Structure formats: C-alpha cells, structure tokens
Amino acid sequence: MEREIPLYTLEGVQDAQITTYPFSTADKLGLSMLRFLREPTDDVVVIIHGLTTSSDMFIMPEHKNLVTFLHEHGYGDVFTLDFRMSNRFPYNLWRHGYTMDDCALYDFPAALDELRRIVGPGKRIHVICHCLGSVSFMMSLYAKQVDGIASVVSNSVSLTPRIRAWSKLKMFAAPFVLETLLDITYLDPRWDEDRGLTRGKVISKIVSAMHRECDVPACHMLSLMWGTGFPAVYRHENLADVTHRRGGDLYGGTSLNYHRHVRRMVNEGQAVKYAPGNPRHAQLPDNYLQYAREIETPVLLITGRTNCIFTDSQVETHRTLQELGCTNTELHVFETYGHQDVFMGKDVAKDVFPRLLEFIGKHSGGRVREPALEPAAAG
Image 1 (cartoon, one colour):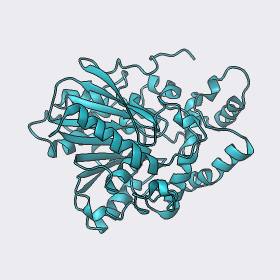
Image 2 (cartoon, one colour):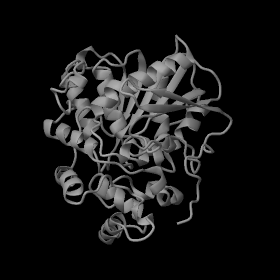
Image 3 (cartoon, helix red, strand yellow):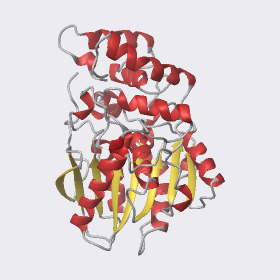
C-alpha cells in the first residue's frame, strides 16, 4: 500500500520551532524528546505515548492534534517524550527483559531532569500520558521517583489495570506460544506488508480472516495484539479514514515482556513490581499504591466508555484512590470513545481536548484561552 502521510512527519505542527533533545538513561539507553516551541510560557506540557506508539500520535497532520491544540490555547511550550516503548526506537523488537519498573525508575526521571535543564527553573510542568506510558509514569510518580509535577492527565489505565476475559487468555498464552513454540521475537501490525511469504505474513492473513469488520490488515493485527473487540483499539467511526489506513505506521511492533508485567498487575489487581526481589529495582516499592496518600499531585483520570483494552481500569483506580483518602484525583469518561481514539480521533479537538485543557488550566498560572466543551465530550 502506498504511504499517504510521510513516516515520522512533523508537518502536523505549524508555526513552531521544533528541536530534538537526545538524552540517556542510567541503564544506558538513548531516548529523546521533541520540543515544539511557539512561545515561552511558565507552564510546560510534556506528553507521553504508550507501548508501540510514539510522539507521532500527538502531532498527526490529518486532524487538529494535541500539540497544536495546546499551542492555540495558551500553552506554547510542549514536549513529546519518546521513551523506551516508542516505535521510533528498535528496543521493542528485541526479546528483552524490560518492564514498566525500568520505565518508572530510569526513563521518566531522566526525561524530567533533561526537560528542566532545557526550560530552566521555576516552570510548572504538566504531564499528559497514555496507555502503558500512563501506567509506568504513574508508577514513577507514586514511587516518588519524579516530583514537582503541577498536574497529570492519565488516559485509559494507570494503577489498577483491568482487562476482559479473552484478553487475559491471550496474555497468559501468547508469550509462551509465540516465543517458545513459534520462535517469534515480536508481533508487528505491518506483517501483511512483508515481501514474500513469511511467518508474520501468514499470521496476519489468518488474523484478517477472522476480522471482517474492515479491510485494513494492520487494524486486525492490533486487535490481536491488544484487547478484545472488532476492532479493539478504537472505534472505527471516530477515526479519519487515512488514520485508519496508516495504522501500520502509527503503531509499531513489540516483543512480549511488557505483556507479562501487565499480566502480573492484572492478577494482583494493582500496579506492582514485576520481580520484587530484583536488586535492579530495589528503590521502588513492591506495591505502587504504598505511598498513594502522600502524593499531592492533581491527577485527571480519563478513559473512553467503550474501552476494549483496559475496560474500566480508570474507574477502578479512581475508586481505589478515593478509598485511600486521595482527594486530588478526578475522573472523566468520554461516552463515545474507546482507547486510542481519545487522542487519535478526527474530532478530539472538540470532544476531548477541552476537558484536558480545563483541568490543566486549574493548575496553571495566568489566563488560558479556554474553548467551549462540546456536549459529546461529557462523561
């Protein structure tokens, strides 16, 4: 299929100075941030993707994206972080042993140190995070590895991951079947584009034969890789056609050790270490809710009502934190959205982003240009 939008394009953000800032983690990985600077402000926003996606999900040119929306409403200094889960790096394609503990301990503290070095002291930093980027950032925050955050918006899942029964079965069986029986290193939504006949292409064809809801093989593979549904990752009607067609570019391949960590959290009912006795993570708590009462950072938990990947995880996190006496957490459910379309849908600038802006504005200095919140976004 001929590519319609350039891979890794930055064309979705206009009228901004765009700079790449590479940095390294304490466990010796090279990561990077993109800075989109329209005007210096005292409130800086950093946006974090999920597993297999990247900064690209926040700068899409086919609709008004999150970075542009923030620029237009008073937040002129926005960073997107590509951490070790990003498809802009090769790390997902190794049969690695990385877990979300590594992200919490190494990636986010290093990123925020670099960000503060760039913007200087005294800035208020607001974080918007998604999917397993949300889980691992919230782990870092609640483990006291990062601090001084003015506000956090967390999408889809955070401290109490929950999934459906079929997803649990896939989580239990897939790592063993794929790695041990089939000797497959990673799953890739683009397998249908392989040249010649490969094992990946055969798997993609089989999966597509069971998914008749659309004619995009990458969409079918994403439903295999994540969640339960036809499709699982988003609602078709919320996406622009070109976004749906270019799913193979927006979501990369991934190996399966992060899935193992999610499985452990689902079994425990909350965010926990993958291997409690691992000295590599000795400074992290075994249970990431251990210090919850001590965390004062305001958090907005958001999710789509028809989230077919992490279902009502955010509702459960909100209930759990309320029971622990945490009064700094809000919840918003977007009635007509799922998991990924909360950021990548064609109408998110009117349906979703105003609610995020409202929350960040409450914890910002100065006046923010606030749009009206459309009724479709109410939850």
